[in-house]
Image (cartoon, rainbow, N blue to C red):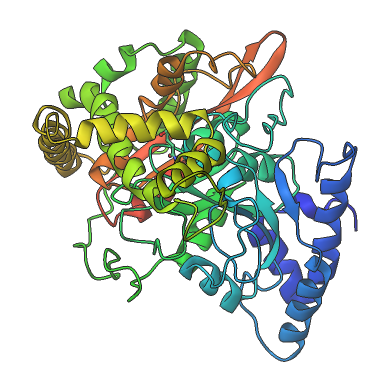
Length: 474
Ligand code: GLN
């Protein structure tokens, strides 16, 4: 019974249901993969995990007991990895920050509660950019995660640990969070499927907030079917998050087969072979009966600028709670102000401090109208523009990223070039639309084949269109 860790969730579920394997077998297979060639002091060879829980086998035994007692959920006994900004009661949740290094969650996030009810097994918590601020996982306070396809490259971020763990078969699936692309971009760089649900589809209760009007938790998996399964379990209205909506909120759509391609957006610095792969995927879609039409999204050019104003503003206010009094790290200075300065100065890394300063600036009374106010207006215009296009087509298709995974350190000295990596992903967060990234083959860099992702965006609440298109191209 080798390589159980390489099964898809749906295949593993079938084997569990027939009794061919047990949850303990699956958990063991994942743990063995995690421990393979692990350097001293690290949980795994890629630094994908910040912690592997010490009770994984006990959790799996419990799942097997529940099955013997008659339970039969498809996630019962499925081992998953959880991004380190999602709270699990009694476990650490550090958001890969020194600020929360020793913070132990006192309650479950709603998504965790739902997964526990379904019987999933939690393997551990995965590495990420500190507070989800980044596109490469290099902003983690606990070291970078390596890309399983080429260890000299980044896994993408900020959910880089989750994506690497799934791609390297250390977990059958994972949860990440996506504020501007943090599920889809590492999915693209690591060659897995990543879904950013409709804003409000999945409860944010118990996530360590980055940008509250942008954040969504979602699955990272090795197949579209698995992403759909996890999404179905974690979604739903939650009285603990007033921004959540229920199934009936959005009008049902026809299920047509038109795909819109914003050609002009593809001129924004995409590498030639990435575009070639994209065209090939469109050919596949055509052969499956989809109609491909050109669409215009002129405002999408502005999305990055708008995102980097609104997100920073929300980050600065969300991170204000880490003051050394209420949560996490607490350092004593000469005065209360000095306590704050010391705690925040040492607790936050560079990128967090940069964003707090920029966010505070765009919200300051003198500059609010010039930056935050304008960005809010532009965001609404963008939302209308995308909604208009999605009246004509079921999904909009683009590559997920402009390039395959970049080299470790390649962009760390130039934050702006790092931010540019998000050019194709931030729109869906600003507009609240659901978007998925799935593998569309590989391109060669320095003699190594590296995965690149295809992104589909659909109307609010129309995740089904994403899954249908995804399955057609998979
Ligand atoms: N890379 C983007 C940023 O740095 C998105 C991060 C995210 O989605 N959490 O803000």
